[in-house]
Each structure stands twice: as structure tokens, then as C-alpha cells.
Image 1: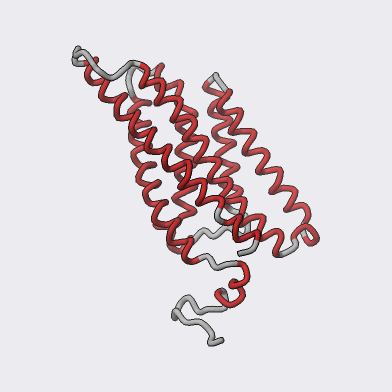
Image 2 (image 1 turned 180 degrees about the vertical axis):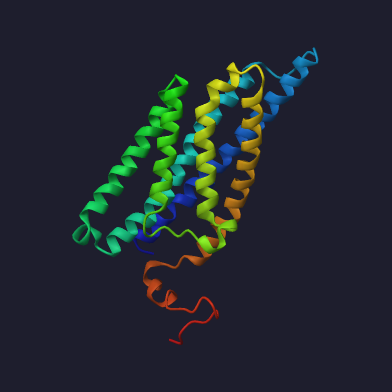
Length: 233
């Protein structure tokens, strides 16, 4: 394995080693928070400590940021691999500069989203962060599997990242809204996001089997993917 092959494992390593375990922590604290709220509403004495709600919020913030960061790492590898393999700096330096600036812009907007307090600024930075993720995902080199979008690792991942950005933007509104509409939307969207994360485990494992090592690419990419045949060596 060459350097680029090792770098291709950074995204799945971070997902398996850090992000997915954190998903279990967030779900566990979310369930305990719900149980405590139901017990308190029923005027029962709960054994679950009140701090569990704040722990859920804090772990949820970290998890949401980790998912968006993981998506950026997953996009960075194929984008820069394409830049180096095609020597785009020589043929289209403007595109390379634009991509680098877009990564910096998206990361900066994510950081500002964490710091923003007024609803207007949270909406602005959430929109800009989401736009950055989508624009980077449209760059050359990213394997999108558009013809099979319904089980594409790319589309699952980008959708999950956008849902996490939305979750970060509405945290303050959840606790201010007495009608519970924001809380209901938060629960529904994050149940859907959890299903996407489960799908990511399957589609990511499948894509690792399909991505060849750098020295194998010329042969593998000469195969006929319609008739499932490869040229004889």
C-alpha cells in the first residue's frame, strides 16, 4: 500500500474508531433524557439524574460536529487525489484554489455555527456550512453512485451531515419552544439520521471492497462493469 492508499483508510478509521461509538453514547443519553422527562411529567420520582439532559446536549453537539468533520475528511481524499493524479494545479490552478478556500470556508462556518447565539446567525451559518458540504461533494473525483442514489454512501453521508448541521442550528429553539414542535422535529429527523448511519455502515463496507489500491486502478477501471468482466492479463 502506498501513501494515498493509507490516507484512504483515514475516513473509515475515524468513523469506526470515534464517530460510531459516540453515536451509541448520544442515543443512550437521549433515551434516558426521554425517560426522565416522562417520569417527571407523570409526577414520579426519577432515578435518572437531572444532569443527563445537559450531557445529551453536549455529547450531541460533539457528535454532530464529528459527523460533519468526517464528511469533509471523506470528501477531501478523493478530491485531492483527483487534483494530484491529474495535475490540476498546472492545468486549472483556479479550481484548486477554489477547492482549498471552500474547505476553509466550510470549516470556519461550522465553527461560527457553534458560537452563534441569535437565531438569524445560526440559520445563516448553518446554511453556509451545508452549502459548503454540498459544493465540495459536487467536485470531480468524488464517487457519488448517482445511478443508485438510494444506497449510495455519498448521498447517505451528505444527508446525515446536513441533518447534523440542522440539529446544531435548532438546539436553542428546542428549549425555548413550549409547543414542543422543534423537539418533535428534532426527534423525527434524528431517528431518520440514525437509520442513515446504519446504512453508512453497510455502504461504506461495500465501497471499501470496490475501491482498488492505487497500483491496481489501471487494470480494475478497464473492466466492463455492465457485463461484469475484466480483460485477461
